[in-house]
Length: 267
Image (cartoon, rainbow, N blue to C red; front, side, top):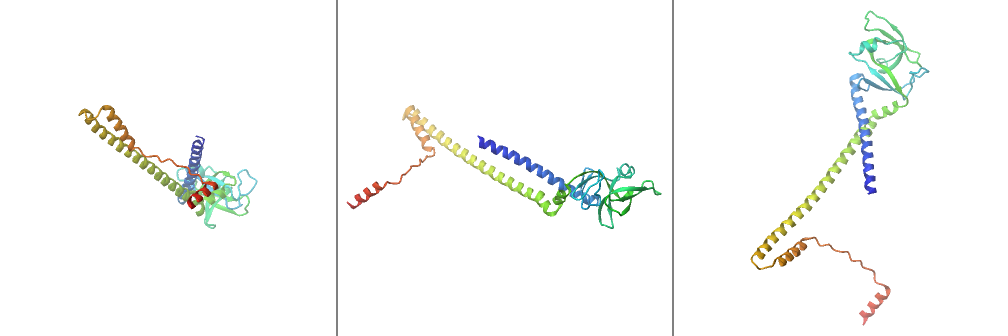
């Protein structure tokens, strides 16, 4: 009983762990697939997830971040552009694509310049630990800083790599498929065993019914009494049961018995 309970607990724990891993794998897969549609920013439900790869934003500000941190940003699109971009202030952090660097960068706004187009201001940005400033047009803003998760960026980057994707997505899927095949084969074997057992039982019951019908005819014709017919039917039913062979324990002969047997052979 305890073993069965332990197995059930382990199975439940294993299923829960597997579901958690698969959900996380799905999250990584979906966010990275959606990155292609948003200039390389992994995103889901309007939130982007960026791994920090430099110390350009390292500083003493509350929202400063450094290498290996994970930065969560609010994705900017045509529907929320005015709300998220036109309301930006000095000190806010924006994410944009730097064509000179060829990568996505998140830096702090240090100045805002009005242009002829009120819907497209120019933001002067700079890293907290960076001397160079960059001018970014409002239309080039990809996302706005929301919050950071310290130390998680490197983990996300590993999961997003080819090897990490294999370990967290491909391998669990293969193991899950193998487990399901094993369960299917096991269930099929159990079904076949039960089917064969029921088939043998049905055959036995059918043979007994035929023998009873024949014995009843003999009773009706007066050849057998009811007691004799019942006895013969019971004997026939017993003959159809599988014979159980009892194991006979054999002990090794003693030294005296061996010597005695040798003397008898010589005589």
